[in-house]
Amino acid sequence: MSIERRTFLKGSAAVAGGVLAGGPFQGFVAQQATAASAVRSPVLQAIPDLRDGKVRLHLPQGFAYRSFHDTEFPVVLNDGTNLPGRHDGMGAFMRRNGNVVLVRNHELNNPGAPFGPGTPYDSMAQGGTTTIEVTRFGQVIEAFTSLNGTMMNCSGGIMPWGSWVTCEETVNGPDVGPDFTGASNVPLTKPHGFVFEVPARGQSARQPITHAGRFAHEAVSFDPKDGILYLTEDNFAFPSGFYRYLPPTNPLKTGRLLDGGRLQMLAVKGRPNVNLAAEQPQRATYDVTWVDIDDPAPSFPYTPGQTAPTTNDQALVYVGDQGRAQGAAYFSRLEGQVYDNNVVYFTSTQGGGPAETGPDSVGGYGNGFGQVWAYHTRARKLQLIYQSPNRATLDFPDNVTTSKRGTLVLCEDNTEDNYLRGLSRGGQLWDIALNRLTSSTGADRSGDEFAGSTFSPDGHTLFVNIQASRGMTFAIWGPWHRIGV
Image (spheres, rainbow, N blue to C red):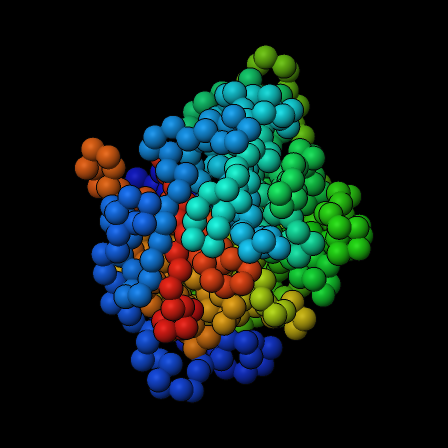
């Protein structure tokens, strides 16, 4: 999610999360080999973009990249779509010809004309997804609109049956008052705040999975063993929740995600409403239970053509308050997540500092510099695997993906230098890339955030976006094993 709503940084240093040891988290234990640890801090250097020779990224020696779909200048896709910016979450799928298909979100807010052809979900909403076929070296083969008429498509998740689930990070609709931008929601024709499925290389049915909740969605991941979808919430000014959606039928049998299932919210056993947004002890571990959300997809009363009486803030907390009334845990701004070998890893962007005393619509709920959590789906245990000690070490982790080696790749989302960081099985953090963008007029764009990191399924290429009004996408490749990725 963009941090345009933040006007200043706040908080104090928190303790760093310790190395996980044993138990259900064996996939994240400390590595023994000292040689492996020696490559954890590669020197980043200026590398020219193979598209035009301009330096946009600093990377380790031996790496290369190509950018594409740079919306600083107009880009027209194969179907006539004028490509919007705000490139955000993204998923990668392999083609038999060796190319990669990317399904990419565009986090556009406020009522307006949809981009691209096809019948939009809402004829007055500007967000959605585009689908791009590229080579492993970032050369575009084809691109088109695959979902339109949605709003604030932030992140999402790759589904093992060959789809991308995209998430709306909003509760806007004609039944809800203006959001943080102050723009009227009266022109909207449909409620928002849902997840939508987008088949790889295909068109979305443009139908929301309403029972997966109407809240400020950020990302999803899928546990193929239990057939459960996990969901994060980035509720900027208020406590956020961690959810799971139990579909009526396992999508691995149906080949798609069905509506009509059950939404639940994470609570900690014996600790009702525990504040996990606050600074945690090293290796903090909790036994988890799940509470039902009885009304996951609320609609609110309104008169067409008039501002709805339900405020945006009231709508934002409606679903989460049902869980918190039953003891659900408090988190700070849950954003990216990824499933890997029975564990769901997810980020808390501003977690880890002194506890909040109430909502914070200016600085955002949470006073820390970021946490990374791991939920073991079989053992039903939650553990803190990393907590940033200061903004120089890790500042606001957002999107996250995992490499074939199991290394986590974190996208930073702050107001200064933004890095891609690696987080090893042993809890070591190191730099992978640094944004060194400038505009065509020479303006500094190093504060633009990374988003949508996703590896090609063969592990060769890391694709990642710059999430800004003038966004772009990068394909990065090189000797990943040399830097522990």
